[in-house]
Length: 156
Length: 156
DNA sequence: CCACCTTATGCCAAAATATGACAATTCATG
DNA sequence: CATGAATTGTCATATTTTGGCATAAGGTGG
Image (cartoon, rainbow over all chains, first blue to last red; front, top):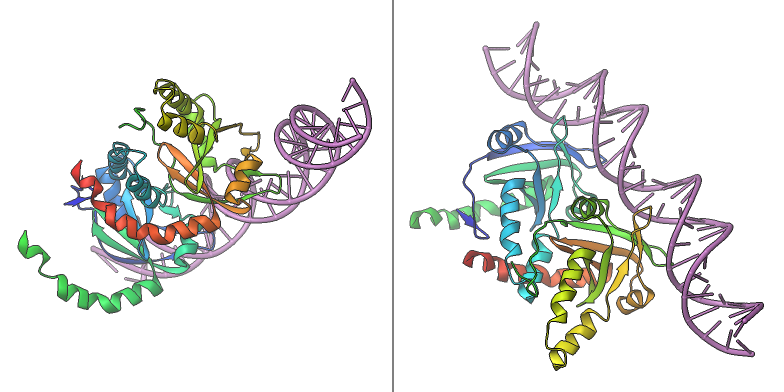
C-alpha cells in the first residue's frame, strides 16, 4: 500500500479504544498498539500529525523514511515548501513513557479541542486519535461513505 | 538531495511551536530545536533571513556552505545580484543566549510585523518563524495546496 | 569628541509546562 | 471472585519559557 510514495508493510493497529486525556495532556496508548510497535520496531516512539479533524499517528521509523524522501525534493520549489509546511510542520515526535503514555503537545490539543475522552482508531499501518465529539460527528456520515467506498477493493 | 546544489543530511526540525516575543525582540527557540542543533553541529548559532512572508532559519554551518556556492555564481548576472540582495542582504547571524533566546533584528521584526505570538515551524533541515496572523492566513490555503501536492512523492 | 538616547545583552527569578515515580483504580481473564 | 495487567491519578521534581532589571554597546546630533 502506498501513501506519499512510501510502502507500509506491517499491520499493527486495529480496532477502537477510548482513553482519558489528563489536564496536562497525557494519555495512554492502547496496550495492543504499544505491544505491536515494540514487536516490529526497536522503538515504540511515534509521530503525531494533524490530519483533517484528527491526529494521525505513525511509527517513527516509517515516518523517517518519508522524511528522507522529502529531503530529495527540489528544496526551493513552491510546491515542496507548501507540502513540507503542512506535513512536517505539523509532525510531532512523542516518546512513550514507562506507563505507556504520551504527552500530546498543547498546540495540537488546542487545534482539535482534545479533552476528556479520546478515541483511538487502528488503521493497519497507522492509527488516529479523535476527540469524542468529532468522532461522533464523523461516524454519522461514515456509514454512507462506507457504502459508497465498499467497492474500492474490487479493483485490486 | 539538492538545494542550490547543497546536500542536507540531517533531520533537525519538526513540528510547530508558539512562543512569545518580548518588546525588545527577544524570543526563545524551541528547546527541541536547540537540542538537535547542539547534537549535530558544535555551534547552535543560526542564520535568519527573509523568505516569502516569514523568517527562514538555517544552522550556521549549512548556511556557510550555501554562501560558498553562491560565490561561484556568475557575479554580474542580474539574477545573481537579485538573488544575493534578497538572500544574503537579509541574512543575520543570531547567537543563542544562555536562556536559549535570540534577538530578532528590528528591521526583520518590522518587515513582518512580529509581535506577541510567533509560530516556529520545523522543516527538516531548517525552520521558519511566522507571525501568528500570517501563519493563519497561510494555513488556510495550505490544506488545499497540500491535497494538490500530496502525490508529489509518488514519482520518486 | 562627548553627552544623550536607543537598542542589545547578561543575569537572575518567576511562572508555566513537562517528566518521572509511584499509588490507586479499573478492567479483563480465567 | 481473585489475580494480574492496563489505565488513571497524584505529587514532587526538572526543564523550559517568560519577565524584569541593570548594565553595556552602539548610533546620533550637537
